[in-house]
Image 1 (cartoon, rainbow, N blue to C red):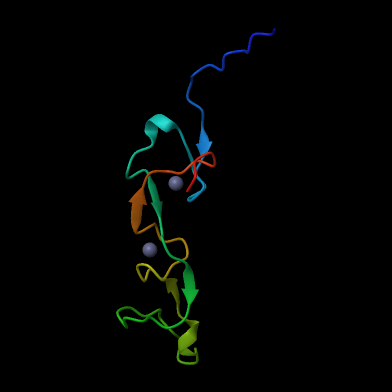
Image 2 (cartoon, helix red, strand yellow):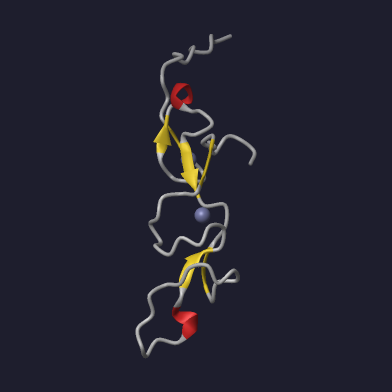
Length: 91
Ligand SMILES: [Zn+2]
Ligand SMILES: [Zn+2]
């Protein structure tokens, strides 16, 4: 019988399923992953709190924002932090 080669227990970089950033298990903590729990949507704000700056000719539905926090830039940093999730984990 062949002996299974032991995988060295080093720092394996993993890719986060949620933010697509790489991370190592030892650097993973409850605030390592920044993300938006909701989708970037294209409609009017429900709460009327913030508005995308619309041009005079833009229809109101030109407003795009994250449904979770109202951030209006697609690359706005996440409003929620949590642990990174590896593809091996069950979400
Ligand atoms: Zn958000
Ligand atoms: Zn992440």
